[in-house]
Amino acid sequence: MTTPYDHLPAVPALTLTSADVEDGGEFATAQYSAMFGVPGGEDRSPQLSWSGAPEAAKSFVVSVYDPEAPTPSGFWHWMVVDLPADTTELPSGVTELPGQAWTVKNDARAAQFIGSAPPAGATDHYAIAVQALDVASITELGLDAEATPAFVSFNILPHVVARGVITVIGRR
Image 1 (cartoon, one colour):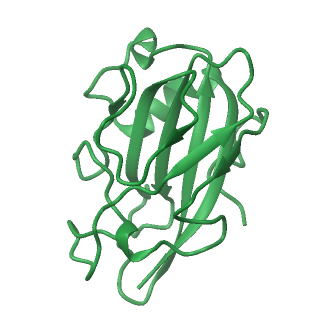
Image 2 (cartoon, helix red, strand yellow):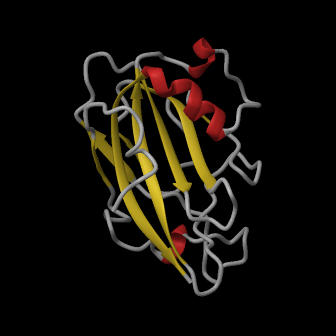
């Protein structure tokens, strides 16, 4: 399965795993969206662990993106930036982020994880990514809380020194 990251410049791989979801598997009910009315959904972010960051890594960006959402531009469900370089995991349903990390407003303009909510009868493939950056904060790139996930992604691209991606299925 290809991901939206496959057409970007190649970088070393991070190992990305999760106790809640597996690469190629389906989201659990908790990772579906209550905000968008999915029965049983909790908008609970999945647990994520990563390893293999190079010495140049000064921070991490974690994101969940649905390129198959029924829009011309997909849908950004979650983006956490400025995770300290010594961070190697986020717990399920994380509410307190380490260091100076913060959550970028997603495409619903909410600074939180929004779970899977494909249209009824649809199956979408979500790219969960962890990217290591050679900057400690995206503010060094002139970005602030008004930046969208797509704009953050565009601006961090030359600063990505490693990346791990898993694809998870959302189905209704």
